[in-house]
Length: 325
Length: 313
Image (cartoon, chains in turn green, brown):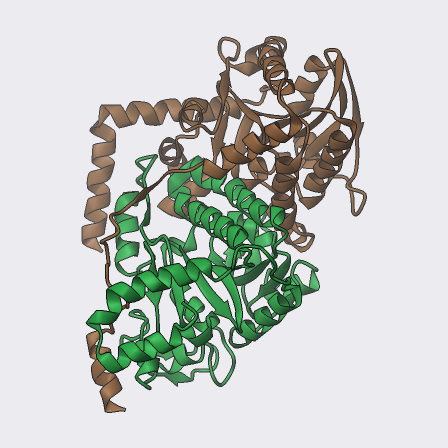
């Protein structure tokens, strides 16, 4: 089933407040310049420090909020959950790790959220990872969601935008987690068959099996400033080979110089930048399936169910917004 | 703090007294010892025994030649094949030369170069997997380790020719899977296939590399388990005691399975083979679905404390 993310606060003319994690009141301090932020200040700035530009970690939902026009997007497949094929336990059973992560997550239920949205006027399907959910690790659900997202994008004639933030494959799912690398590569094949583009944004961090699979195969690849991008993280390298690593090892800026990515882009500028590249690649829409079809359908279903329960004036404004449905 | 220590202590005790877990843990660790036996046959040992002739090709045509991967053209039965595999060294000097079987991006790019030749000349591709993982190092990262592994998987996925992968030794992490996207995946009886080496997993999850035997049991990397989960299509028997006991016999046993797999695949149309290969990896994994009533509110409710804060503005 799908959830609709819509900024009610914006409709009411108030600043948006949706992230349960960031809204704890105590606020956050920039680790780089020491600027203190309270309440919604950071979220309103896409969780980027207003004075030094430091990129704070962001959840999948915060990333999608910042990416989507009007902060509105529809999230399908929130019913997918990890299973425990290995009956794995390390210092703690895998099932309890998942349950804890789910309890404090935004409600996507896993380390990846899918969205149907518009980016700077360009309709698209997006997949965003949540580093807060078990280190953004890739298990079977991440693979399943990316396959579904790619296939839906391909069917609807829409581009796919992928935002990563992950330590790599989820070890607790063992060999099946490793296989998700191959699975996500297969996912993109649907896009390739439909001659549709994939834009990848590498968040901090993007390492291990995620970097070495779908994160590395975008047609256009951006990275957020200061993001660590590597197959082997600095700790693994130093432990295995005792190699002394330079300070700037694996950073987005270094990987740009290495020729591994196309550009380093500030999170606040992502919607415009991605929107622009999608506009360049936009194809004339002839007899193909109308791209807004699925969006409209789900939006209509949502409206039928929810609008009667809302205050009248609010419902009218939402109806007005949803004119294309 | 003390509670955690207490729990850990109890767990250690239960690990010791629970017979089932202890047995499982021991046999997996025995497999790990077998697969790392210094006399275990490596890729070139199998190549010498399986194929009547082999011409090794070198270099990725852009940077260098990576000895941790061998690739080339071989005569197999009445036809030709392309062979790509990880290569470990036998003695101390050779081990360093082969980077302990840990390839850099040049190795995978050499592999892709040979795959391209195979696709063009209609040669079935056989890959032999035996690596503790891709090489971890700053230079490998600089030259695109991540991109090389991802591209190698995609190249295998797109091949028109039959592709068979054999895990002959340890298959660890993306460094192994980069050569493992195939129509048929065979695993030798004592080989292992895992998301990470037991030591690596123990260091991260148990914060203690010495817990490797425990991690090995938890990851369940054995051929039998991989077969059960559909990761491997067949388990190839090894000579009594393990492949190290008799290289010729190990190669002979593998030969039968390899020919069978290639014969089956030759019967399929190229497009159908590619479709099935894609479908195999499109489905791999295990998840569940919760009832859709879960968190039913379609509009995320505003947190309470926050509503108060907003009204202050």
